[in-house]
Length: 185
Image 1: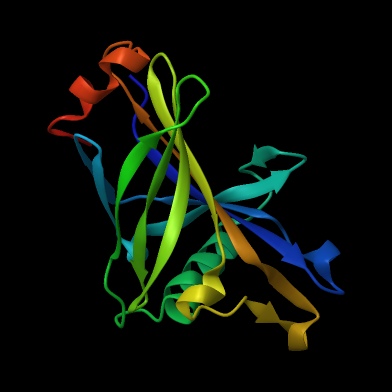
Image 2 (image 1 turned 45 degrees about the horizontal axis):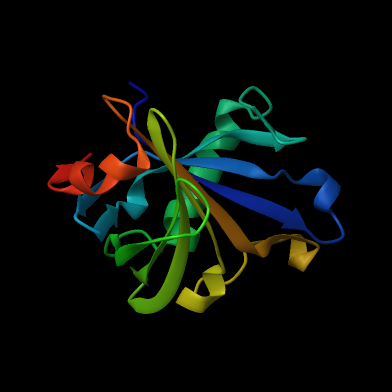
């Protein structure tokens, strides 16, 4: 069974974008609970760790030195999430069925950095996984795009969030509601 995973993807921009990297960041500690059509997730903002650089849609885990990884992880904790001043991010919402097969829409609110905003997440039921993704605009939660070198190097004000939950048995669309009761990862 595929272990649960949650990743954040960042995108560079600016004059010196060629010197920067699009990153894949792993969220190491999170909990997702599903009951009927209700979903609640808690994300530990202090558990972000850079996995590597995205190149042409593929992860290159060897592109960054350990020193670069440590610097990025420290920047995320201290400058972006203001280490010690944040609570976990909390999402709560409900799932509704979409017309096409095995796809659902998860709508709810995300509490992040003491602000709450509406979020929509696309969920796809596959044979042995539940996959989900959404795009967030960090400035909605008061997180300005990261900047360096006087703004010549910066990140876009959007991140993609993608994750998957492994299943211990194949599911069909018909068995989804039964599966959701009382399940958490």
